[in-house]
Length: 314
Image 1 (tube, rainbow, N blue to C red):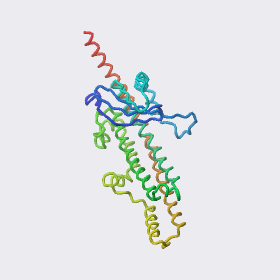
Image 2: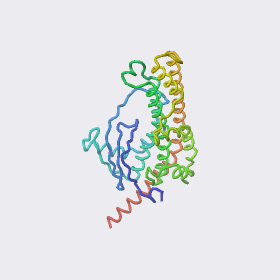
Image 3: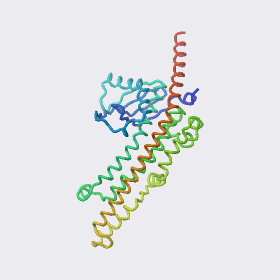
Image 4: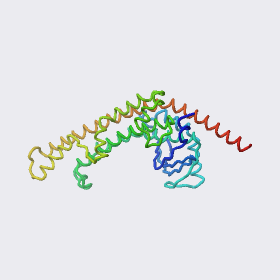
């Protein structure tokens, strides 16, 4: 008997967005003990242009997409039958196996998309506004950099949380999202049995250097001090108030600031690459337990269904 069947067969989850570039839709769903799921429909654009090999989806994501055709078709058929439009909610009833597959798919696609989100932040930093554009936005350049740097720090730590939840769901531990943490998942015997601890620790190692900064910002509202851009911003403010170039000429300040931003972009890009590699390792390691539990749950569900049918006939 699987841990999921020994605990609640389907935990109630709500308000979570599932976005996949492999599908033509995304959804926000709600689940209950009867495996009834509510979806909000969003149409996604597609392109026929050939993408570079580095952007190819991980084989595990492709396998999740292919193995989950049944629950995806249920969603699509229900949406068509009800004439649902983008922004409308559609309820779909799923079997235990389909529920499991949709959950794994939801977390896996979220995790796989995070490195790309970090690269988007790096692009914002590279193409930062200057001069009149900053005045039009009514924001200082240091504030612009700090905003995107905070997003980078938070998203990097989010990868660890999603990875833990993805592992817990894939192993069918029967835990609610708020119950999944390092102790209950990383330290779980099933995690060790499927040799998932090392991939999880590798991913955690990528994010750990900035964990303190993230916690201070999230829990205490302490804005991260970004060196050396903040120092340059202080010099710039002091000179603006005094009306004189006390320490540095304006062109020197611009040069130092640009150099500091370039260093931050490099840091973000390096973390994005390291995170991408760590995510790939974890997704590869999760293929075996996913196939195992999919088969096991399918077997258990079929036996249960057959037993119920026999009782009804009797």
